[in-house]
Figure 1 (cartoon, one colour):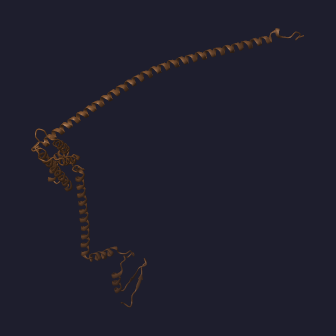
Figure 2 (tube, rainbow, N blue to C red):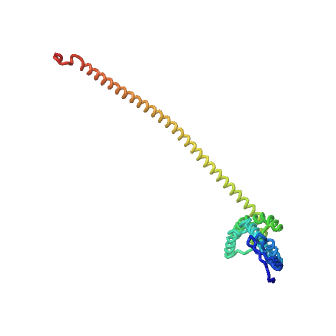
Length: 315
């Protein structure tokens, strides 16, 4: 350090030293400009040096965290979308394959148990005269077969579409399993009916379903005819009711028109009578006024006439 240093105070309040060593020190530590404002360029340079000194592992850790967050978000989004698709396909047909066998199945087995209890045995020859047990079982089985037709035709109708959807991965696993369970149940029921038909009458299994279809078609035709007849009857009743209402309406309109006309004539007559009455009253009143006026005039003349003065009035 120099023993002799000359200090100079600048007008802006800063201090400089004339000594060379002091100048070097000032150059090293003074971070202000001549006007006393901090030198931002030098500060930025220092910040760059600090940044350059940051450990690259920190950037790597940040990148790994960001990648993990993005990956988890994408996976969650895919899962949510997959769940929505599965839900869509599972709810697409609702309870379309939530099938159950008709009550006629249990009713058939009840009839069979009763016939077996009374001595009937499966596979007996029918002969020309069927027994009451045979008739009861045949009727119960045919009723069961006819009741099965809606679910059988439903599976037959849906089978091609479901197989196509499954082959193209356009249906959910849940829906496909539901369809398979329904198809298996219906197929088992078809075979069971055939087996029961052979036990009631050997060889009947070959035609039992065709007969059931024919009976079912006949029942549908009768139901349609009954519905059609009922609809026609309802239309006839409605037409008859409408005709009656129209007739009553026309009669009412006619009555109202006549009544309105009569009321108008009555009002006209009443108005004319009132007008005549008013004219008569006015005429009577006018006559009274005229009489009163004549009486006043007569009294006035009498008051000023000589007959009305007393004798000696002027003398």
